[in-house]
Length: 384
Image 1 (cartoon, rainbow, N blue to C red):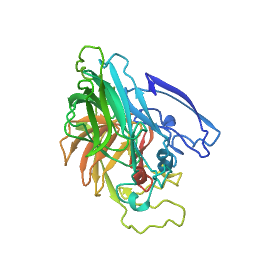
Image 2: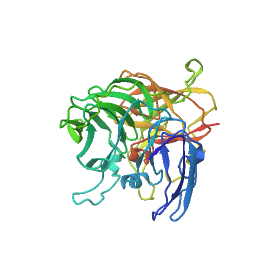
Image 3: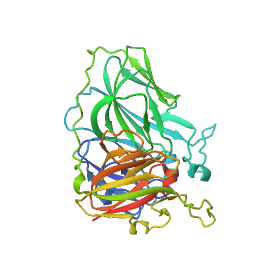
Image 4: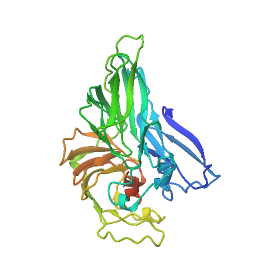
């Protein structure tokens, strides 16, 4: 969906199971955030819930349930949510591309969405990769024109090593927030929940650009003839109204993302095993009171620096609900500081992010590899 300014929607649950809608990346009131037993009760079959909120930021966002996430996201309950700028941006052409792999077998039947041995590693990957639900999709671009291409990773698990061999492409926004335009480069690692907005100059009519995950072709951009004059690169997109952290007076908080010490797990009690933890605490998704024990308490209006330390051999796309944060520095790569809601924390990486705690509530802070989240890698942060 596309919107400007705000959203009002009656969500009617016609599924045989309870669910919610979480609006990934949107800075909104807690009661609209879609987290069961934290911001709302889950919506039962046949019931409805009214979502109504203003949207302060333009950009590429998405929506998904926060109930039985492996299965509900795995079955396709995801979608892009595009918030348009109030003023013209200079882009005459636009495409939205959702990346997702599907847990299906050779005949298209669903397979397991989360396998324990994979949940303890990189996460349970699907076998069929698609763009907008289509394998090996072909997306047309007008020849010679600059097209805004929004790429959204709506996958449960997969981090895409995106590359566009020989393409003329510039990065214009990361995870909904504008950046100073810069060349796309050799590749960009887009973790689950993350988004990137590119400007791509289409080649002459009939030529193609391959969109790849590492060496694997995901789909194709095909240039088609048009009668317009050659396009020009648009100016930088207008910044979103995100508060700048006060670095000099910010309080520092450490977050360690770890394996659980013992890999001996008991699944006989019906609970998912605890494989991952933050600061020694594993989240139990079956415990409706977990959010009553926040891992950190922030003071409204105060600036904070989060020191993130990945003490594992696997990547974790770390997502914060309700607020945007600024990525400052990493010990593994050069960072051009930018605002985001999801940061791909690499194996054994240490990174520093900063934010203003400007949205009161209890906000989820978790890995967006869904079966990591469901086996412990989630916490609550309270702003009051």
